[in-house]
Image 1: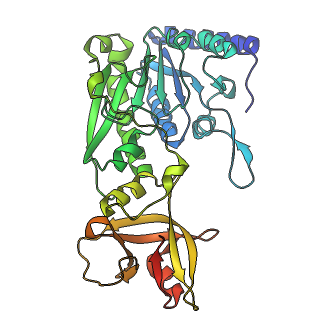
Image 2 (image 1 turned 90 degrees about the horizontal axis):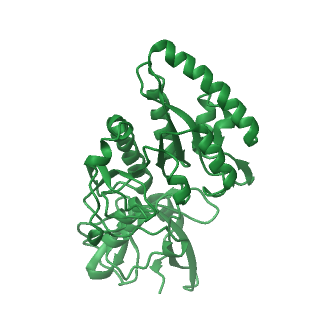
Image 3 (image 1 turned 30 degrees about the vertical axis):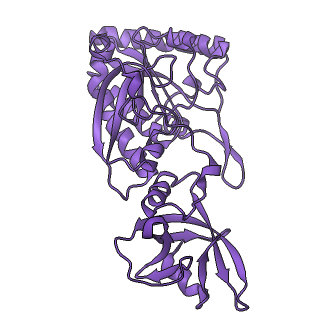
Length: 361
């Protein structure tokens, strides 16, 4: 994605600022500049909300610049593609030279460009880059972050995933000021959300950022006039819990845990990195072949009257029934073999043609 050199950017911005100033003077108002920082699809939905709101004639703000992660190699062709936020901004006609993609938010050239935009406020949503103090010192109204948890719970990179892994019945989204400590700034407002026991991480992320967008718009007037800083509540650090980044090494399921624990892990790890398991398939000679499967969706069996070997995987209804710790059973509804498409448990079971399936020991 092309972006202007700093001198060209400054010339562009000065011209744009003069035009905006003349328009604002004619209308008797002056919109405040905000800068949005985000990268994945959930952040793009927030930007879309901001751009739509800023286009209103009576809006108090305008999106002056967008900051996102640099283009990354994606898909099988490993082609460099812009982030979801950059793509959305371009589709909405946002100037490409006001979309900044620094490797690090502390780069001198980037900070110089940011100062040239003269933001009153910066807004972050799943940006994925550490903001240094030199960045935080630039906008006079501060930097606020949409964080998908009820802070101080689940501070860190994977709040939704870790909350699902813990099997929480309630979570939410917080709007908080950004400080140098991880997700530790004063909370302006929060919204609670009841968690369905079958919802997966990608769906819950989308829901919470949608709620966060609305919460942001409700609170923007107080943030821009400074009154939000007076009402924002400091977090109780003693109640903080951490939500570290997901690790692909965590993705393996071991059936020596209870079914509920495994079901929650499948929900939490949905999307990336997913959950995997090793099974044994007894071939026609009675010898075990190891099957590596990706477990796509599961449920917890409320009752199972099937009787079999303690390691034998059974089939009932539309599910594989895997015996787990504590006399519990995990229902596997969908799975995927290496190099194959996702399949239902029934189609997978029919493909076994009567061969016995066991847990890997």
